[in-house]
Length: 419
Image 1: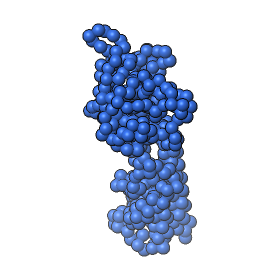
Image 2: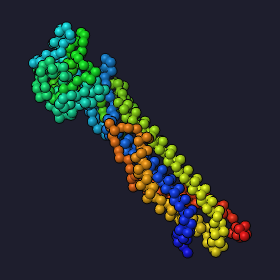
Image 3: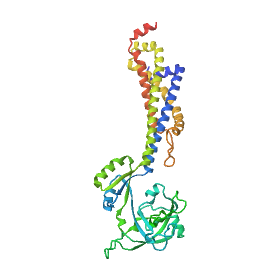
Image 4: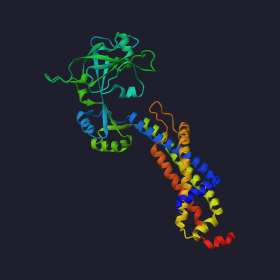
């Protein structure tokens, strides 16, 4: 009689003992599958956060240092780690067909009444990222394809009755490059179209006090780089943010960048949000790994104790098999087959229960990050296969360990002891 048939006959004959092991393996499988489901969800959530929380390295000019040059930017931008950049530069300008917001005395230098900030993406500028400003109307500056677009404050718009789609003209008083007479500072007019309007959430009324117009937040205008053409701001930048595809590569990239630039600029990372989220997810991952290990060890120990009691009652049967010429490996395979059959029977209810349990446990283990990313907690095919493999490993190990004391004894000694 082959191994599988003997295993089937025994488990079907000893239904009570088989049900005990079935219940034990179902509970263990449910716990293991639920933990694997939670762990898989945390890994998937981490991947989504890597994509959505943009991690950047900011290169900026030092105090009284040279600006970041276009040549250096082009050199860094060629690196394969970089997915996009956001350049930042600024110039003061004089309003031509509109008036700046002045202080509460009504006085101020209207000759340099505004500051134009040039950028590739206004949403990626520091003031917008830190929520000092937020868009309330229209569209932000969002790429190199933009042409002559600007985002203005709601107070400047209110004072001059401007809205999205209107045009306004400014005259630069510094930083222009006139090729005809080589003057470093020549007046140059630019006309821009208002594409959006922003406000400062913490500022309910206009700034009070004697603040120069160009420094007042009401007079800050963000424009795309096409507006800066012909000025030094087009190729000399106050800061440039380089966005990386893989946040984990940030530290190594920063070290390489510092060495290649010779320490001429300040280099700082903008990965705080990702680091905070990653820390929470890694903590959840370590907890699930610990619970998986505990589940496997507890299941193995419980199964070993049950099988040890089971084998103790079967000593005479096993001794007879040995006396009939069945090898020890053959008997070991029979017991393993018995456990494997019960495990396969318990696998389907474990998957169903584990999927529901994973959804419940995920709420208490994985931090809530629905503002950034969300995943559906479920049992994948890979996780089910991993659980089945680990289950088989536990069953076979427990069966071999429970059989070891009996297989080391002489069959005659076992039979004589049971007479």
